[in-house]
Image (cartoon, rainbow, N blue to C red; front, side):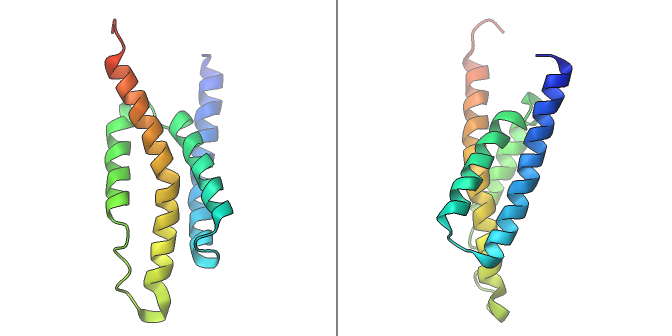
Length: 118
């Protein structure tokens, strides 16, 4: 792949990530549990997984994703003005986006480990 095409794909992956985070934050505020937002975030997560994570970033990305998924529900005890529920909704949407990305990256990593000749 040419450097220009690689840079373009990486840029698309980066902007997909930014759009996904913004959508997760806004969705967590105004539309918790919305199926359309979930579907969009899953698609964005797949794009991020395919385009945004390089071989050098695999370990850091997977560890960060695991930490994010483990932290789910941590804000629930904050009852003031419903802030805990809102933060949990946002974190949940971010996890919805990152889970498919993590699956893609993990499969790519396993493929690289199992590929013969390198």
